[in-house]
Image: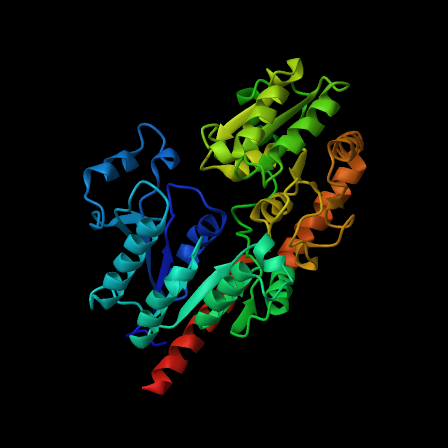
Length: 420
C-alpha cells in the first residue's frame, strides 16, 4: 500500500450501529485505528428490523425510505456508513435486498472497495453474490466469532453443516478471534484459509479507574451505599448470555448479603420475541424477588462502558457460547476480576483459569458460591485483577490486532492484483 493509493476496505454487515451486535461493536471500535494505518474504510449495512429500534431514535426515519433504496450517507466513528433500506421482516427477501445493495455498492466506481469483510449473520444464499464480488477482483473475508452448534457438529452428512462448510469455503479467508473456533472450523473440513486473530483492547480507554471518584459517581447513580459491592455483566440480556442464570445466582448471594448490587450493561430482552418467551418468563419470575427491586439494574446500551467497569468489584460472563468475549477482556483491562462459566469456544487465548480469571461450574448454585467467595476476599480480587490486566497488556493490545488485520487485507489484495 502506498500513500497515494490506500487500500479501500469495506465492512459489510446487515446490522450495524445503532443496532447492537458483538462483532460489529468490536470492529466499530477498530475503525479509527484502521484509518491511522492508512486504510480507506467504509461500512455497508442495512436498516434494523423494527424491534431493534428504540422509540425516538433517529433510525425511526428509516421507514420513510422505500425498500432497496440507499439512505443518506452517515458518519459513524469518523467512518462513512452507507445504509440500504431493508424489509422490516427477516427472511430471504431481506437477505436478497442486502446482497443486491452490496453488489451495486461494489460496482459503483465511487465506492468500489479493494477488499470486503463480511460480519454478522450470512446465509448460504450469499454465495452467488460473493462470487460476483470475486469476479470483480474483490477478495472476501468472513468473520466467524463463535462456535455455534452447527460448527461444532461432527456429522459430515448433516445438511446444515454442509451448507455452512460450502459458505465458508466460498470465501477467500475466514477470520476468527478464537483458537477454539479455528479448530472447530478445521474439524468441519473447512478448506479455505483460516486466520485466528485475537481481539484487541484499547488499553487507554479500558484502564483501571483513575480515581475513587469514578466509582463513587456510578454508585451514587445506582443508589448504592459507600460499602456496597457491584457485580457487572456487559452484553445483550438474552438466553445465550446466561442472563437468567446470573440473575438467579446473584439473588442467592443477595439473600445473605445486603450490600451487593448487580448491573446489566447492554440492550435488553424483547419479551415479544416468542421463541424466547421461556427466558422472558424466567427473568420476570426472578425479578419479582424482593432483593431485585432496588439492587438489580438494567442500563441498556451506554456510551461510557469503561466508567461502569471501573466501578465494579466483579465482572461475570455466564454465556453458553462465545468466541473471544470482548466484555471479559475489557473488564480485565479495567482491573476488574472476572468470573467465567465454561462455554463453547473457550480457549487459552482468554487467559488461564484461576490465574487471569476465575472459572466455575455453569449452575446458579456454583456461580452464587463463586460470587460470594470472591466478594468476601479482597486479596483474591486484587490478585485476579492484576493478573488479568497484565495478560491483556502483554498479549491483546489493540494495535497488534489491527496490524494483523491490515497485513491480511493487503496480502489478499496483492494476491488478486497479481492474477490480473
